[in-house]
Amino acid sequence: MNTKILEKLGQNLKKYRLKKGLTQEFLAEKVGIHPTYVGKLESGKNNPSIKMLYKITRTLEIKLPELFDFDK
Image (tube, rainbow, N blue to C red; front, side, top):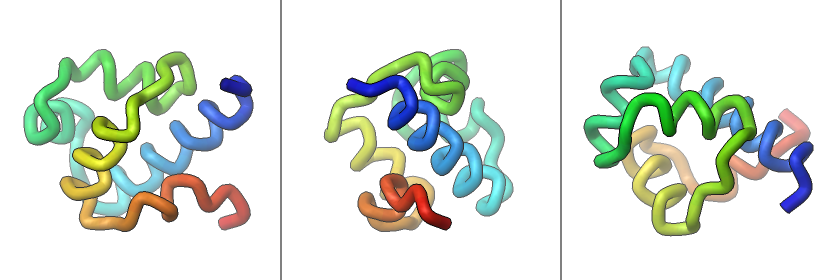
């Protein structure tokens, strides 16, 4: 996958996480992953599965396409 897409995805993930007032640790606990994995996702270093993205969006209370809206 294009690294720019992963970086933009990570930026959106971080934006929505902070908007909800959640820490990386809290999000990780709710989703069932390690906090460092959240950090790697937010920095565009990891390529998450659709299943993982679904869990994250459910926790953040957003729709999956919102993570891929790179124009906002």
